[in-house]
Image 1 (cartoon, helix red, strand yellow):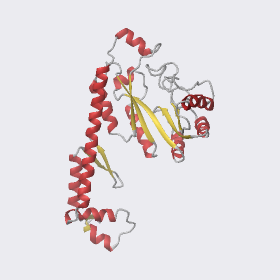
Image 2 (tube, rainbow, N blue to C red):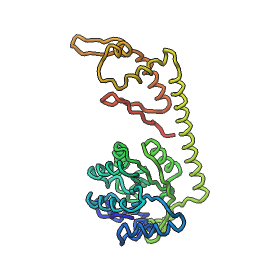
Image 3 (cartoon, rainbow, N blue to C red):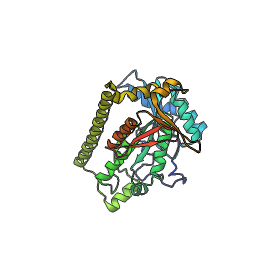
Image 4 (cartoon, rainbow, N blue to C red):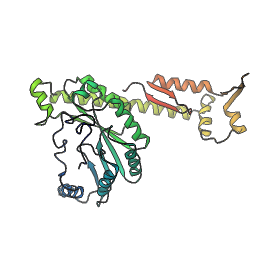
Length: 328
């Protein structure tokens, strides 16, 4: 199912769309876009139920850019499908530059009453490739939209393509490394498919750029799995280290109990002052400095986190933002 074209088709960001997409927006195996959504859904469901009867369904808006329309049209389409019996959620494929503030607010509300996943096409982090395939948006636009969606607790799945023209294995792995640093809930990895009557077919016939072999694909797959396992092991090790620290009962880690106990304090009581504050300094110009007990332990913990390859940034309100400096 799809709603309308894309910003890189109608002239907003370019013309012609991504060079690898077919005229249908690579939605050949979905419903007939000339029919209403309910009819499309029921026709596909009839086929599926021959193999798997009595199912629950997640409707998939896949081809083209399915948030690229006025909000009233989006609401009409999404709500129509959600009213179909046994539909329990939506997967909506779109672009990072095709979700307005008003649409974000609606998706946030929708996410509270149904299962929702937004799928964002990225394909590559490399600007040269992105321009070649006519994506029409920047990596910063993509990263910013991921953050906006996750700030609203909306699940995000990202699409990338292996084997894009002139990309090396290192470049492909760099794309995955970048995504490992983002708060996303899944990655769909596609192999480049050259469709007939597309700009990429014309490019291939002219320049015969390298197409990944089966063996190269398997090697790349193994490299992805290795990176994933390394990342999982690091996470497990961090969890083990934290568990050991929390189990310790000596004074060395007593401060963690205090900080946990008073993390949501609403007022400064004597008990809080005694347990957490070492001294209060007032300068001649009446500036107040509070020195906390266990400040050195706190700094040591942050240093340990940074040694593990994490970037620790303190936000204006005092909250810490911890992110991986380099993907595993």
